[in-house]
Length: 115
Image (cartoon, rainbow, N blue to C red; front, side, top):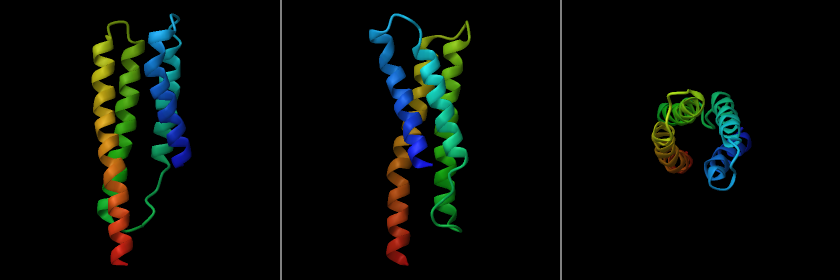
């Protein structure tokens, strides 16, 4: 599922750069597709080590980053939504994603070291 999550993140990040070069509002659909793919991947991702509560919590936090990305995409389609709202939720999801991308491998190394 990590490959699918990576694909979703790549699509979402490509959509962030498209408004600069693409006059047509295709970026909204690409961002929504990427966020949806990421959400599905995060829902079906299971921890590598069963029974570790901290790792399970980190995986659940990672799911929230995908939920924030989906919430950001809602503001692209809502008539009253602004780009500021979209960017706020995108930055919140990115901050959580950065934290979990550092904390999950560190936790896995610690579990592997302790046996």
